[in-house]
Length: 389
Image (cartoon, rainbow, N blue to C red):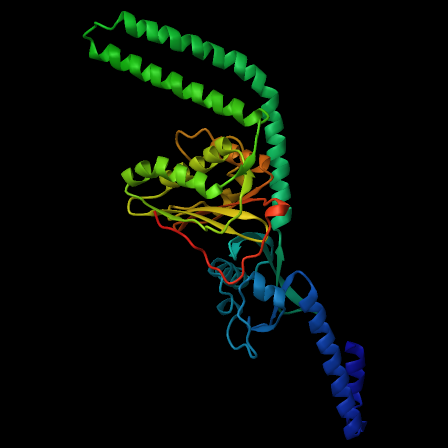
């Protein structure tokens, strides 16, 4: 088409009014077809001129980058990108005249966590740079599959070690604990405060080591999930009543909004309770005084959603894909197994768990549990009928 236009322009002075009109119609039709093709692909494309002003953006780019559409663009491209982290990345990269491929950014769309990969490269025409191309792609499923494969490999390695750990560590710990109690009993009447303090410290460390071993074994052993048709809201209310005093003791507000329209689902209360408590305790550790923790339930196309959000310090982007891996922890005394167990519990329920976090603003864990076919229904014209506890 480009060659045709160039040849036509060379002879435009020879064309009559109707021929010029037909030529313009042909060009407009071809341009429309090109835009339709670009709007139909599943990748986002923004093209900028040498002044960094957008000259084209397809609909996918508008959706991925929260790009603001305009009939006429008059400002630099980053002004129209409403996702601030991506906008700053684009601005810095273009200013540095760099080419960067596949930089991942977490993006939240309707309570769904998506990973958008952004690439920035020069627009080259006839050997000269004529502007910039900003290419974006949804890498959520690919990154999830990569993470799942890595977690599966890690859990397989842990399983191999489990039997040895059980014999070599747990049994001696049990023996040490028994003899520690005997030693305390023998020194019951001693007035030496230092000796009593030393014994208490040793006893606490034995208990801590024993807990690590138990968590480790639990993480690698097959789970005996026995799900029954149950009320998730009822279970959550039980958990809230249990953990609310601990949350309030830390000066944190506990907010609860339960959608009363969610259907009954198949869950094992023991394991779901453990997963939820793990997440809430993580939120307690991450949230400062006067902050909040929010527990909500809702229904989506994928199933019943349980969301646990907080106003804590958040998770750095480079850690997002690692938090469910065994032994990964940012806590000084953490085992790195809590979120691994939570992930495993949700997967054993054929569910899914994702996380959205922004440093300094908080973290949101989204658990989706499947709804049995006979429980599926559509809720029309109803909003969340919740209760604040």
